[in-house]
Every structure is written in C-alpha cells, then in structure tokens.
Image (cartoon, rainbow, N blue to C red):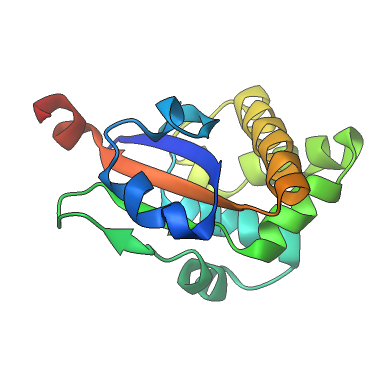
Length: 149
C-alpha cells in the first residue's frame, strides 16, 4: 500500500488541525513524499538513537487517526528531531546510506540517493523545528484514500 505523506513543522497544539487538513504542506512548513510509512520512520529513529526497532515502532506510533482508513498523524520523537538537526552533512549521508540498506527501504526498492535526499530534507526541517521550538509531524494517507477524496 502506497502512502501520500506530508512532513510538517508545527506547534503541538496544531496536531488536530493538521490531521483534519487535506494537504498540511499548504498550511505548515514542510514537504511531501510518497512511499514512507510508520516502519520507515521507526527505522530512522532506531538508527539515530541506537534503539531497537520494536521500541522505535512504539515511539513512532500514530498520534491520531481521523478515520480507520486515514489520514493518520504521528509526531516524530523529540530525540529524532534533535539528532537530525545537529548532524553535519557527512553524518547525514552516512545515516542515509545505513537507512537505505535496511529491509524497510530495500524491500520497497528505494535507491540510496533518494533515501539520502530524504534524510537531508528531514534534517533541514528538523533544524527549523528546533529553531522555532516546534514539533515535526508526519501526516499519512493511503493512496487509495487519497484517490477517492
């Protein structure tokens, strides 16, 4: 199942409004991506924190769900945002290479350069979140639901 994903920076109090939005990147600073899911964000969290994937999956669990079929909203753990914001480009490239080599990304055929680009985009947004004292949210909608809306 493919996903339409918007990663945005916002105040925690905006979570409900983000969830109700049909395209959060039009209202908050962020970017759109496809093909990401909770497992991929959990793998990134586990890589950045040195934690176990199962624990990272719990920490990256959906924060809210508008309907069973989506959209879903999760808040990236603060530790992930902090790590992304503080890494230099060379370290981010290494994270991207390691992330691309994980089963979550390899199984979906993600090219290494696309994963590295994603990590850089996330890091740039994490820098904004840290500078503004805000959180990073991931809004996800299955492609089937996006097509019918």
